Length: 342
Image (cartoon, rainbow, N blue to C red; front, side, top):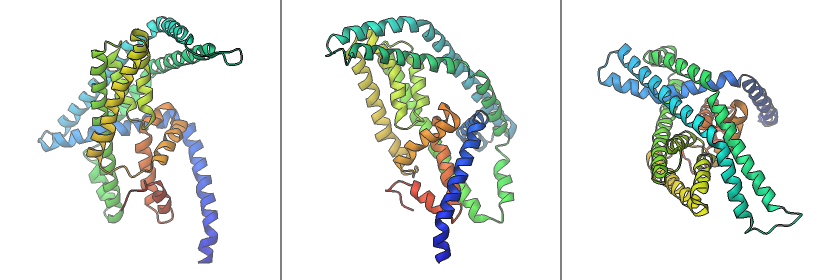
């Protein structure tokens, strides 16, 4: 008993050292791991479509080919939409910058200022930062063509092997029924979460795009797509997606217009996150809010900004790995939300 108690600090130290080494190693090969993780992510989203076609008695090679064709067409359409919109947006950034500076100058007269606290200069710095951030995102998005092609090809190969993968796993794990059941249960919960999250994000993106079209905000479809994409990032994704259309509303309609657009997007997000998502997902996500929040920064550090998009699925995988051993199961328990029950 004493031996076990004395070994606890050493075990914690060993786990901590292993986590640090693993984090550094993953960060070093993050440019490779990122596309691989995204390929698996898209594979999990598309594999139910393969199974649906299988239930419709579509032959194996045909159903996989149809899903791959659908994915390629979707990827091409998304790239063309985003690239075309971003190129137009980048050409208009100087004009938006001039509008922002004019708006800030008009707003500056209503704020108290002094030599020690130059509010106007601070506002201009904030405006320059926001536009610089937007320009950086545009530049980064336009330079990801090779990565997208790699993800599409890798996902296609994963889908080709989708039909035989369950049989292979069952054959390899036939003598490990407990592990097989655990992997199967986890895989189902992970796929269910990803599919529900994708459906919810799609509803939010379409709703936001319709709202912005009604409000005559430039590039409404682009901001709707951005809302769909950033919806995978808990807590922060909403604000990142709402910032560009709110800024454009500020330029076009003034402060009241910007507030109206923000409130409209906020109400859509409130409905899908607090009404729609809980009713569909239930308690499938057994992660505490603090773990969810910290995972965004961790996977963002390891894989770059794109890591935040798949931070939750990756954290769920880590939790499953910790649950697979008696020595680390307590760590998985610490990752659960206070209200979760076995």
